[in-house]
Image (cartoon, rainbow, N blue to C red; front, side, top):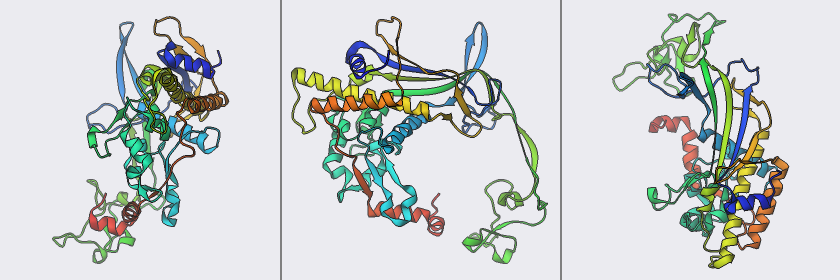
Length: 420
């Protein structure tokens, strides 16, 4: 069944518990090729740097590995929505801070609620201005700050994606007691029944610089970085020359990327092979049904059946954003990181899960269908008295935020203040 707005609305109204999408993947190099999941900081004695899980299958222990975490997948889904938003194919409120107002910060571009770590509640928005007023003190900022799961209109009008991906307003005036909206959509890519591989590394220096050639010191002149002449070296509080580097090999040419690297074998992050790789994404319609919208966009109370229809429309619009995120992310491919390009073995399977445990209802939607779905949803919410904010909120960084960024970029100031 092709997923229409009517079908999605009926599912959100109570016809289904969740929408699930499963995509079976394989390494681009072929089913037996090795690929590389993300590594994590672990203790030195840990046998692997991968996020490993074990389970029992037919009486034997098998190893599974996280290939892309829920948090990482959330970021990818958000960037998929941003791509559709930037292309003008998807229309929804997406507040952003425009750093191009300062010639020295043009490289930061526009940081939107889909980019910021804490979405619309991020400190980047807190420390930026909307029409000359700090965001939290503006009408839109107050509406977002005061939003709660049982009174979510302000968040819906200005940042509906924050209701989809979840947000905790921990940087607001109430600190840790700020509103929490649970994540309504989650996705994860796992590799099942894996074997761990090994990775080799080495380097031959064409300059043939030997490790015993000279001691390397930090330069007294910042622009020089390193020197071998003690007279030009930086000294510590005791007048001792400071060796260059941050490891036990301080002062050796390897610290400035010169010299040979002895061939080595890495057994803790050497890639994996897997019997099966799968992405599983779930959007909880039950979670969306817990969001309440007691007032319309102007703050006027919604009552009776009018409120009921408005709430169903708003929840369906958030669900439509989720469908668009899944459809667009699929077409952005699965090039997750270096040596981790995965390809679908077949089209993804999207299903509506019934609360009675009966067979799921299979549905389909591509990026074009998802865009139409979102248009229909936005039209329905507007008719119900909950129109999305016309145009995305454009903020600019406050002078103090601009100054903080510039100071952090100045290596001399950073060194003098001990900044990391």
